[in-house]
Image (cartoon, rainbow, N blue to C red; front, top):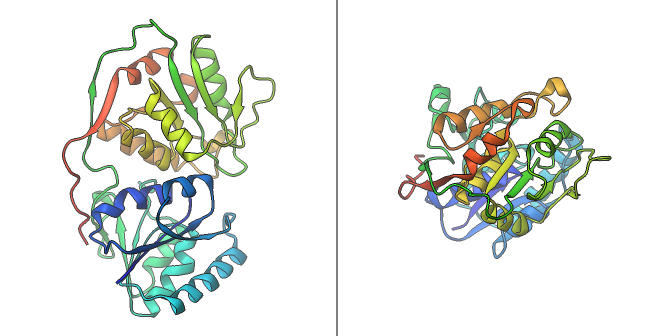
Length: 313
């Protein structure tokens, strides 16, 4: 039989892709996700149904994607359906549960303080098993099977000695209309002038700033730059943080703040707190970031302790 894996792009699909080897699923699998450079690179060689990007709370897209999922269910048979969110889960998982399929929703690791709207809605549906990635969030309804960040640890290595330019990746993701100019300006202020920096700035307005910025960087190119970098400085996006630790980097994580118009809420502080507590990220506020923080992550590596444990269904 075939497993169906469902996730929006960004951190959602990155988490599901990282968790997939631990889920005990059939090797034959189909993905449903949003078309983007990231998903194209991440899922190369996989069978993928790509859908258009849905805006936040886009009910028309939810219905449209539900119709596409319905057609997929009529064409194919699946043994298990798993999603890490967000809106695509609402389009696909209820249909899977109604068909009597083994259906599971794994809440995003960004949701440190509680489930998302998608998670709350799906938890109300019989036939959908719901999982949190934090043991402290377990309830009679929500189970804990493991975390995408299981098994990583940080250790110090040889420090950057200044004999060559410092290589840095600064990435703020692509969070819709929300920019993160505070982080970009702070990094310009603290980095040495000869630093080699890849600036991935999303929708951030960087007009007037002395940098060569790129709103979007293809996933394979960004991954290669992260592996080559001495330091990775990023907003507290789950996909970005996961990509950094998988590349062996201790990310310098800076949460976006609602008070500064950088996101719809302060949920990025949740993932920053969780990673900081695990010791696999250095967390700083944008206005407090210093060059010493950049040098600290530049002399630290992250690696898996052993094979990560299987997800516990």
